Length: 347
Ligand SMILES: *[C@@H]1O[C@H](CO)[C@@H](O)[C@H](O)[C@H]1NC(C)=O
Ligand SMILES: *[C@@H]1O[C@H](CO)[C@@H](O)[C@H](O)[C@H]1NC(C)=O
Ligand SMILES: *[C@@H]1O[C@H](CO)[C@@H](O)[C@H](O)[C@H]1NC(C)=O
Ligand SMILES: *[C@@H]1O[C@H](CO)[C@@H](O)[C@H](O)[C@H]1NC(C)=O
Image 1 (tube, rainbow, N blue to C red):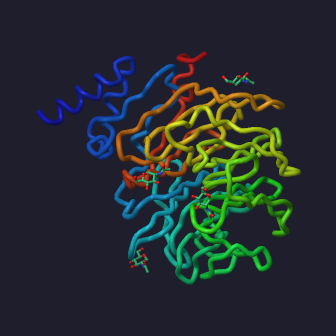
Image 2 (cartoon, protein in one colour):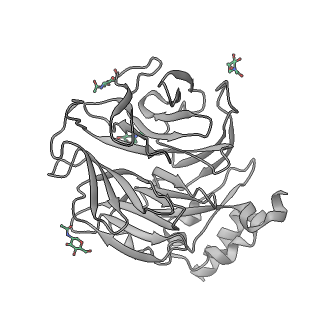
């Protein structure tokens, strides 16, 4: 009977999408959080993929971040907690591959910087232990291959480079690296490093003016050469030129309730997917064409259940699937574009 009611309720929420009914019933996620998910639909562009991961028992901590390596079909998840694996590696189909916990203290953000020839993942670490205050690169088996920053020592120096709470990073195909530092604490910096880790440009002022930041929490780069920063404490997204660091514009009209915590583009570059943590909301925002940044325009939102708390997300560069690290629900969920399964619906 209980099960029946669950199914009926789920079907009710998704009346136009009755087909979902079958997928939701019997899933563990549904029992925990799925029931309360409602989609405010101007356009329903994504659906929850309850078959990812196959077994959610691997989420034993607080899942802070996720990174997709679309070349190799891998999904990395980093979680916090005592005596647990810190990094989990799944296939994009949801099968668990392996985990590690050595040399990771307190993960915050991550980025899979892979090519067809190299599988690697970068992790920002805000811990106060001997591996904390760093940005580290691992191969896909957990071997540490690069450390940026001064392990175990928080600070703001550039030479030698120090971090306090590095929030996230984005790595271009050229190897250039953009780092936001950080997640509260000493620093409010965005900088770009070359592939051999030379500082190319830096904005490091705390404030509300152009190129100043207050908790720069997530960063991404588009194909038009623009850097997009979730300037969370200032409740805006700032946009800069990736070559010069010059300010190009800002969106502050979309985030009046709460600042953005995560930014990633869809593979076609047409939409920015933005998470708002305490609102438990994902927004699909139209990306402006080359040139003027203009005003922010939300195309669609995905309202998650209360206290799911989406922290950071990543988008699969091939399939467009969105993976969301939820620190409240303590899980990573996958949302897939409707049109990848039902081409006839949108065409
Ligand atoms: C590392 O992870 C293993 C399980 O994969 C666990 O048994 C061990 O206690 C963990 N160690 C630490 C220090 O977290
Ligand atoms: C940055 O400015 C904000 C607002 O004035 C303030 O609350 C915060 O403590 C400042 N951060 C630092 C690191 O100085
Ligand atoms: C979310 O809420 C918590 C608890 O009230 C608060 O500490 C935190 O600053 C909030 N985060 C954001 C991004 O507003
Ligand atoms: C953005 O919105 C403001 C206030 O509504 C308006 O004055 C301005 O013209 C808009 N800018 C663009 C580029 O649409």
